[in-house]
Length: 255
Image 1 (cartoon, rainbow, N blue to C red):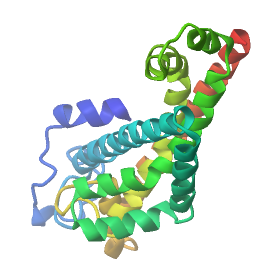
Image 2: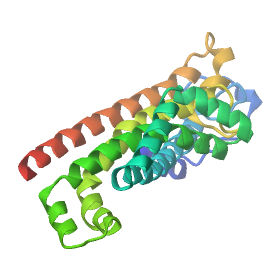
Image 3: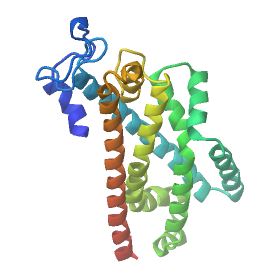
Image 4: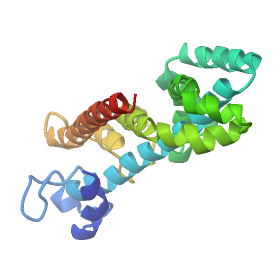
């Protein structure tokens, strides 16, 4: 799927925004493998370009939430107890509010745009990362080699950067991969209700939204982007499970 959305628009050089009213809602054919939509635009081209926005947008959200969660988790684990208590209570407060609802409110406050939607998802999904990274860092800090580094006077920041983070890199990849699917679902859901890209720019969520009125006549217009979302999330979950199993075996050998 990743190769398709990166290379596909170069191989299938059809303008996803070009309208041809004479071929509106055309059935799949050689020239249009997935048919055309209500404006005569090629569905395959729009799926490929829309996948770029969906996957790269979700990747940017995962990167942002990972960095924000890692920073706050490290502050909780390495900082004074009062800071750990304060950040933990703030994290629990944010977790009490459904992330999609909070992202919806922030998107409305920040004005409607795709960049603001990504920012809202970052600001509402960091709590899970922060708690996970806090627990992982505390577990790593209890290892004997960390105690040895502390005994010879290595500063906490140096311990975090030189010793803790390299050993947590595998777990960080697993956490980001596992959460990638849910980010795609949240991004598509918010795009579906109109908080994503402005038409006619395609994105999997707004492709489903644009096709609602034609579902009974041409259900493929909703089914195709829906299958892209579902299969991508499934593959990401399988990848996350496989990476987790491999990491668990490595951790058992290391222990």
